[in-house]
Length: 211
Image 1: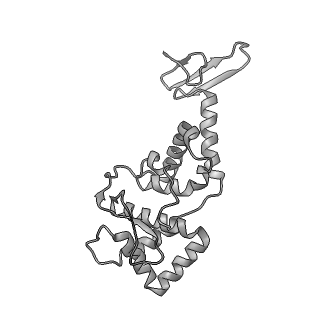
Image 2: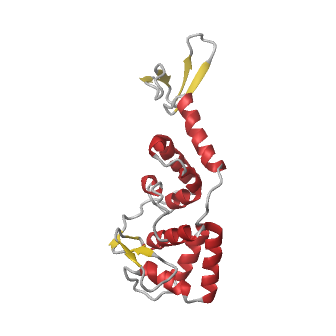
Image 3: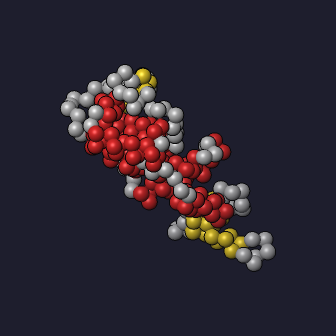
């Protein structure tokens, strides 16, 4: 056996080869079980964070992703750095797409649809860009990012359960630094993590752009 210190300032534990241990309280009346070196208090908080994210209502953007990907695939390649504007220009000039766009805006808000539409276009193409420009061809899009650089290669795309755990772990480790309303973006964060975006980037929700 080897001795390790628990993460919540408890007395050290005896870990067996199965990474489970028993720690007796001073009264010897209670036995606490550590799993993988995580003490019961910390484990409870982590599970609570995960459950909290699962149970809270949130704004879903998966319909936005499917919509802009459909429009994107209709545009002739090669795509330019103005591909976000190209997609919204195509939406504006095709009645059935415009009707779907307006329905999404009614449900989620125009800012959310435009912001996440641009974000999903960038992720789909594996592109990125920091420069924001004003749209000159499209009245439904105020501004957009020039996708003039390649994004970091995606190495892993976690399944939903793994993405939920990654989200909860990051939230637990950084909750004091996160916006107070971050939990309402649960669906977006999970979708981003499942698309291969690191949790640290997925938690950078900036709904103000793309209006």
